[in-house]
Image 1: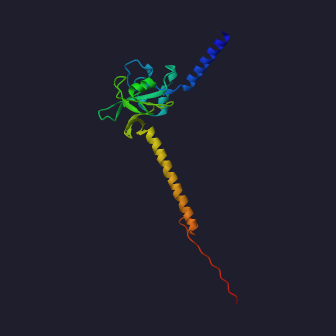
Image 2: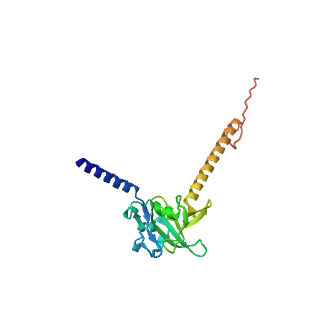
Image 3: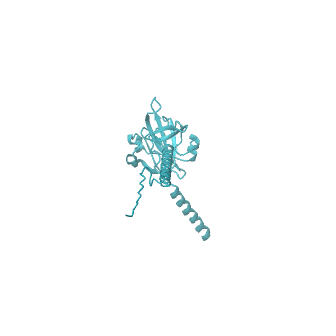
Length: 204
């Protein structure tokens, strides 16, 4: 019996430790009144700073999602828009789990889909990583609607970094080739001058 109790305690400790490791931190707030029961604390509703993408202004809204459920493994950001479909008029930030993402049909990191819950929202997005739901709008990139910070989504930033690296590598390769070709042609260095010195002597 003691062995069984010991094993049970060990399993519980391991489970608690795993939960602690898997815990995710998200911003929980609403720039409007949520109007329905959610994990958003009442004091974090009707907060204008919730619409900001500045981590310093959002820090007061950060929560460990394990406080509400150990099933939460992602962060959510949802928006309502003006008549132009672009200007954000409401920002909602919350924790989300796999079931919630499945209901909204969210797939990859920062993917967005039309969704109207809580009432008054039009688009919901999900991301993976602590404090990742700091987006302040959405963009269409590669045919997909994605959450974005100041007009740039995670995919856009990643693609730009990859393109910049590829461009830098191509420039380095070109410079190396020019340098090698310069030496082989007797120039000495790319763009340099070829200097030839001859010395002759005569005997009187």
